[in-house]
Image (cartoon, rainbow, N blue to C red; front, side):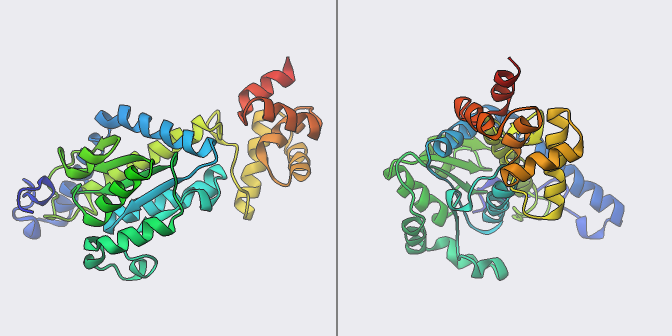
Length: 297
């Protein structure tokens, strides 16, 4: 472990405990900003991963996430947001987290070393050829994550490895490798900090780009969101109003005709019948832009 960059000493570690609060906090912020900078070189690989994920979901398959500890928490946070943001059913985005739900209340390190647990979790996830899986590990050597990546590759999935150590085993065994070379942590070995920050940013970018490719984003609006609370119902109405160029009451009426679905409501607010709205979205593969263009042609 001493040879891993994530376990090495950071220049700002020495004497950290004795620094004035604002100085110590400045060092911590500088380290977070430096971690974020490592995401930019990974943009081509993130684009590849987003395309693979979109292809899997478009074909009716799944996008799975796998990880342990802090990396697993970053993956879980992204997976949980996909339903509300992009209307992607949770069943299509299974999360393989070392230790399961019990580990979310009290994380233990031993579960990340258990290959039998990884095998059981993979088997129970119902994944198949054509699916995509995002496998996260700061060190790139976590046994749980590597076993799942290996099983996934053998089952015909596209394996995306996200790790913070160059040349790590996880990156070598993945079809698409996303290296976030964050290096040493200010708190020695605490990869919930810089490494996790970079992972979270990369996942944010990957899933949003995937949403764009699936046609779930239009002019920066979430047009496939699931409005399941008052805030999102109001947001849906404002989205329909903004894109269609109509008043908020017209937008609410259109949403009432679609059961809260934003894309067809935009078309209805813009003048289409519910039947025409459905037809245009079918013809465009669910993309709102082409459907609007056809409506206005």
